[in-house]
Length: 185
Image (cartoon, rainbow, N blue to C red; front, side, top):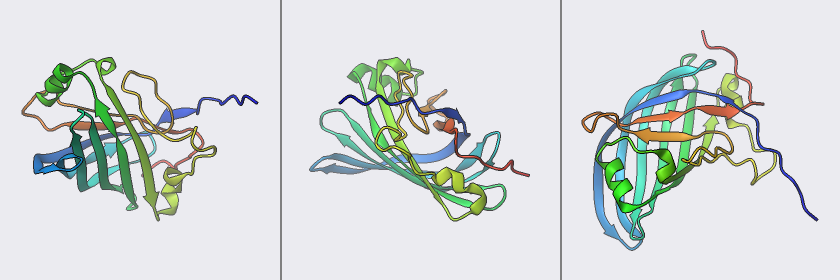
């Protein structure tokens, strides 16, 4: 029996501008090079919420097959005081020349490489409870991003450097349409 699935309804959530530290390599390990990038601060803003990035880290494995595994965990402090834990896990890979250009800070066509993440939010703040909404029909509603523009789920991310000397900017742009938030002060 075939079962059709509706595409999730999406709406803009926020843009995040994160300040990050230098890439720290912990050296080769059985699965690849272990790396960490500190998330040291930043801001986020959307039509219904805004605030500061408290901090955290992006733990990475640069695998021998060229895939970069990402595991970012950080906290947001919303303008009304509520704290939100963000866990963003995913993969990025593509042709070696494209990955080298990305690493060098060049603007690269998102269709030329693969970048998907799954984001989860957790908060004890009642006014932000919609962020932690459970998927209604796992795994079809799991939030992931396709860098080629085929967004599915809750939160696509992009990370790019406009200038190689500038810090990367992380953007999260949509939320589940059925997760309401009151407007911040």
